[in-house]
Image 1: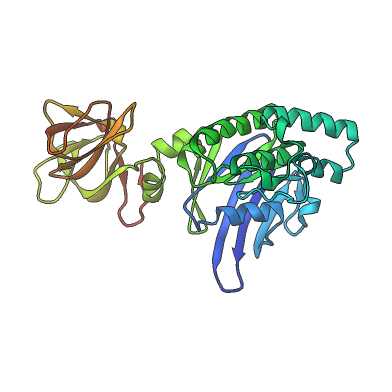
Image 2 (image 1 turned 135 degrees about the vertical axis):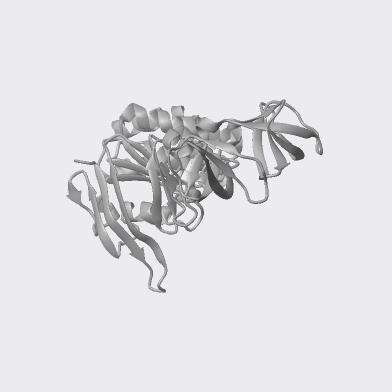
Amino acid sequence: MPFLELQNLQKTYPDGTRAVRGIDLRVDKGEFIVLLGPSGCGKTTTLRMIAGLEDPTGGQITLDNQNVTHLPPSQRDVGFVFQFYALYPHMTVQKNIAFPLENIGTSPSEIEAAIDRVARALSIETLLDQYPRQLSGGDQQRVSLARAMVRTPDIYLMDEPLGTLDAEHRLELRAFIRRQQLSLSITAIYVTHDQEEAMSLADRIVVMDGGKIRQIGSPSEIYTHPADLFVANFVGSPGMNLLSGQIVQNGDNLTFTRPDTDIHIPIRANTAPAQVVFGMRPEFIRPANRGIPGKVILSEYLGSHGYVHVDTPIGELVMRSTDRFATGEKIHLHLNETHIRLFDPDTETALT
């Protein structure tokens, strides 16, 4: 039995907006699940329904073998981390962290020990006597995390908890969240639009768009084998190179070509429809002495690597490279045919 199960979960608001359109998800105990998608895709609404902060208009939520679909938040053992802190302004940091433990009748000595443990883990020991208004945004988010993680609930629910932080604090707290979750073996559902966060944290990623689930899989599955064009384009920075074209058969061999070009790219497939969308990640394109000719139109230097935008006869291609290229430089590109992905242009789904 899954520890958390969403069955045909739906949310339609009074104005007719369908935020969540009947999703199904099964989560095992101890899993770290990331809901990933653009703004307005339904991921936060889904999280709030799991927490009991939104009432579903259809479907069922089962948590630890209990139907909690319409139970209030107080009857669900969840630790919720909000995007914008949601700290009690009239309470000190220590009181904010202690509050959830006091609510469940924890003894003063246990509360003190728990606060000491989480405060040291988050490096906020010196802030315990201060009030939220005296803290920076980063420190307020640390306190918010401490309040959620000071106890061991059935499930952690986190709504973009690092979205307001600078890069250094994001990395530091991201590592803390994962270590804490692993050490306690608590199930976690984490909402973000940040792909790097999703890839680094998740056991499985749930890609959402338009209130629906597009794909569920491990980070490597989502990245390497996107289920459709949306996932191919959304996951990855930049996304997958995507070109519309046609499949041509030469004897027993299939090749991909674009209209008005004589460039043919070998395809490792037995069959394919005449019209396809060709996809390839930037890291599987490299410069070569011969291959597809092109001219550099933009070179982005990112330190350890860069992204090179190349205008070619089959369209613009983005290549990941550790080499530096000048704008206007003429180069040739080699495409690794073992990493070609094909998509149906009508259904937008991946072709096996």
